[in-house]
Structure formats: structure tokens, C-alpha cells
Length: 337
Image 1 (cartoon, rainbow, N blue to C red):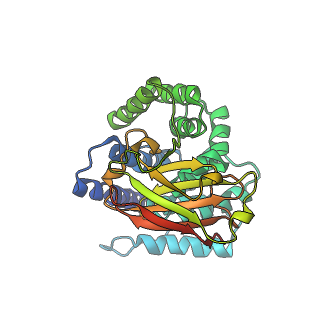
Image 2 (cartoon, one colour; image 1 turned 90 degrees about the vertical axis):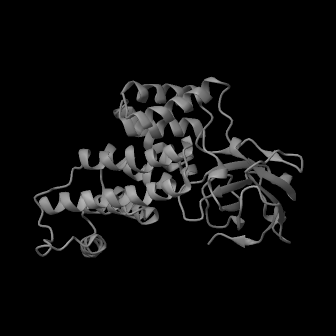
Image 3 (cartoon, one colour; image 1 turned 30 degrees about the vertical axis):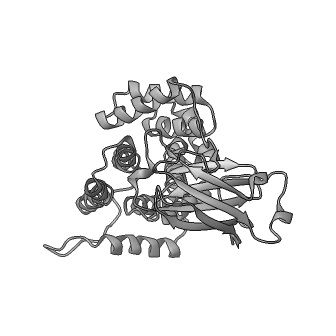
């Protein structure tokens, strides 16, 4: 058990350094910076160790005297064991937690999915962890499977802090401002840390000041982009014929290093070809700014099903851009495998 605690502490410290150091170097003091720290560290990671159902009596590798634990080797060893014994639900859950702390979110989603699919009656903890990992990879997943899992957790744990946080995001992203306001107000009543409370108050202030404006389209040459990004988008030959009544165009800005979308707009495919802009008004987290990032990856995706999550058969294009720079021309000519 001692080895596990030491390893867990090392993993948490690693995660905090990974998240906080770039923010300090860039001197980010906006709510976006605070929100990133909250979502990825304060809200999520400490609670893992408090609610863990892991069997601490299991034998664990013991490092030699004076030798720091090799975290990647420990995780690799756990994954190797699970490949030979894939029925271990708790093992897959532990692997998911480890990958979240290591910021390897796609691997965390895979591990949690293994645990979820192998559990006859998935626990609320597993559902919430699985949903959270999906949100780290693609925040728009809270409109789909991840959001459904969060809603299920709130039914049985209406005052769970993490569930209220993500439940507010689910409601926010689905244009349900009253539910978002109710959930974040309940979370605020639980006396969260000051940094969490500041973000919640900012979000509630925006909700109370005029409702939710998700994916508010800004297009045309006269749009006031400021520190945002402009793209000129067109379809390659033959793709227009594949458009269905359900098809939607999503324009997404994200950190090139990975993580959830920073800003998103949604448009009808009839807007193509056309010029579009992403500004701070399209930010996924209220108070965040595209100007906080020296570069952004912009993805334009033609979703044939109308769903925000990329699926096989969708068409897309992408480019790395600098906020405030001249418009970038993108030709949608690549297909999601």
C-alpha cells in the first residue's frame, strides 16, 4: 500500500507540473487558465484517490531501496497483465486512472471502455470517470455518450461534485441554461476551493446575463475576430453529392498539443463555400480566450450524421494557425477512417 501511495503522489505531482508550468510561463491569468487547472487537476484527480475502490491488498511491485518508482513501467506492467487477464474490471479502471494522470487521454478512454463493457452493472464512479476521460479527448462528447453517463450519475448522486460540474457542462452544451445554472449553483453551495468557486461564479454570471450562446456563428469579412481565427472553407469535387439532410459543418479550434476543443461553431452545409470566424464568443468555457494560445489547430469537419463527434465517413480539413492572423484557406478533402 505504501508503494501505491508514493506512486499516486508522484503521478499527481507530474500532472500538476504538466498543467501549471505552461500556464505560468505564458503568464495566463484568465478564467480559461484557471478552468483548465480545475477541470484537469483540482476537480478530477484528487477525488480519484478519495473514492477509489481499488483493492490495496493486492501485491504491487516494490522498488529497490533508494530508487524512485518507474511510473511508465508500472503502467505498462498493469496493461500487460490486463492483456493476459482482460476480465479484471478494477484493473482496467486503475489503468484508466493512471492514463488520465499521465495526460494520455485516448488511452484512458480505451481502458475505461474496457472496464465499462466488462461490468454487468457499471458503478457511478466508473461512469463518471469514463465520461470525464471522453470529455478530455473531445469536450463535445458531453453532447453524446459522455453526457448520457453524467446524467445517469446525477440521478443516483444529485450532489456529487464532479457530476454537478460535468452535468453543468452537459446542460450548457445542450442549450439548457436553467439546468446548467441549477447544477453549478448546487456545486457552489458545496463550498468548493476558491479557484473552483471563481470559475463557477463567472459561468453563472454569464448565464444570468443573457443565456447561453453556444456555437454562435460569426462569418463574413466584417466579423470582429480580434484574437480569434478566420478560415475560408470549400469542398473538394464530389463531396457535395454526399451531403445528407442530417449533415452539419463543425469548425473547431483546439490546442495543437491535444485536449478538448477550445472553441466551436456549427453551420449548415449550405454555408459552403464560405468564410468563417472563431472568436472568444464561441469558447467552450465561459471566460476563456483564443488569444491565450500562440497557435491553434483549426479543424473543419463535415459531419454526415450531424453529430459533433467525428465518425467514420465524415470529411474534414485542418491547419495550424495563429490567432489574429490572416484568413487560412481550407479544402475539405480528407475522410475520417
